[in-house]
Length: 307
Image (cartoon, rainbow, N blue to C red; front, side):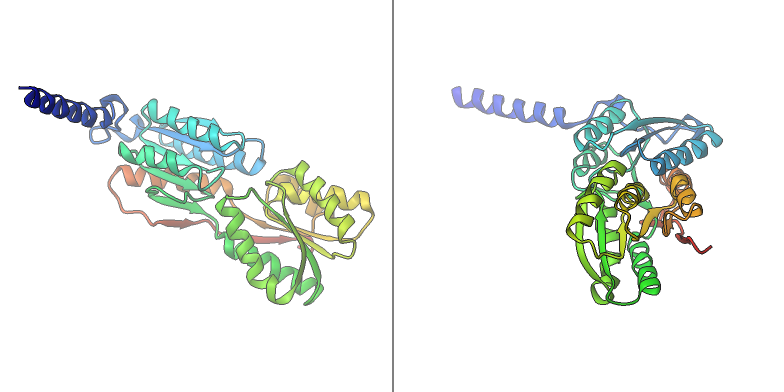
């Protein structure tokens, strides 16, 4: 009798355990009977303290509003833990599609997998997720952009020029890819004497650049993984009185103004608003059962001081 009772308890626990793993009905996206205008999009942005990501967010909101779709926007403030919590909150609110611009490509994987577990499609913007099922990555070709920056330095200064590199947030796919592209050319044709992370931040870019200049007074050029760091580097260079070429990445308004003023040499210009628009369309295509490409590119353009 005791054996039968024990077996009954084990089976009961197994059933309860299986049930507890099933997500609540209200959290599951029920897209089959929904009209496009009834869908809800969740957008998680790495930081709205960067003009590039503000433009990306605006592109998402503008495209969604044009289609009559509600968007819930959350700002991770460059905090990976906060972003995971933000995405979990969006899932709890019952969004039908998740658009995620990861702060850290590895860290965000758990949140992507949470969405996967209840069938919410995920689109990533500008940066990828290392794990989990992502329907599409909408981004510029970051590797190509890094190559464009290195090639421009070679064209302007010749082979063997001493250069420095300001890297983005460690762990972000954009950091890896822009760095890879830059090194594809620079490792053979330039001499990289310093590289250090400044986390895509203007103030950190200034501080890191000050240290690099002190340790390497003969550098001739700097490639920054984004415009915010490039603009910080310009401030440090100006204070030092040295003549050092700076190339950024993004093409934000402040960078374009700095190019017009003769301060910033060049930027690899993206189209963040277009990235946002393409991400919304990709999300809607997935919901409607249409096939989408795993990588959806947004064109790049090198904007220089000579244009």
